[in-house]
Structure formats: C-alpha cells, structure tokens
Length: 84
Image (spheres, rainbow, N blue to C red):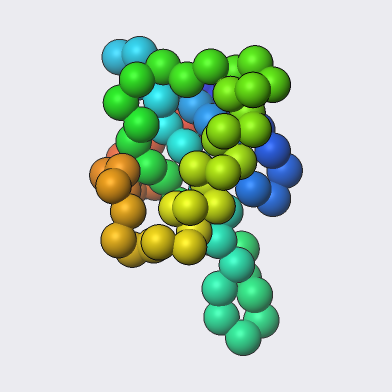
C-alpha cells in the first residue's frame, strides 16, 4: 500500500493494491502519552482534495473517541506492507 495523504500526528491515508483505502489513526495512550498508530479499513477510495482531508480529520477524531467500538475493521500492522 502507498501513502496518498496525511495530517501529521493525526492520520495517514493509504491506498491498497485492491483499491481500498486504509486509514492510520494516531492515538496517545498511557501516563506518558505514547503515540500508537492503528490501522482501519475504509472500503472505498477516498477523496484527497482539501474537503476530503477535512472530512478525514473528523473521521480520525471520531475513531479516537469511539475506539474500540468503531464501525471500520481494525487491521494488524504486521499484515500490511507499507510503501512510502
């Protein structure tokens, strides 16, 4: 998969070979606020124009607030091959 958009310390959007989109959302956890990235499958291609990126920011914020009860499937990072 290849990164197609990002907002630092918030999210990164990747395009998979099958055309699906994968959203990496950053979480800060624990007493020392460790940064942890979690990956979520978003089935359809995503618009990377400014309006789409603003919507992705709100999706990422919603995922953080609702985790682990999110509507998007969580993917294991070990199963992903990331190309930058």
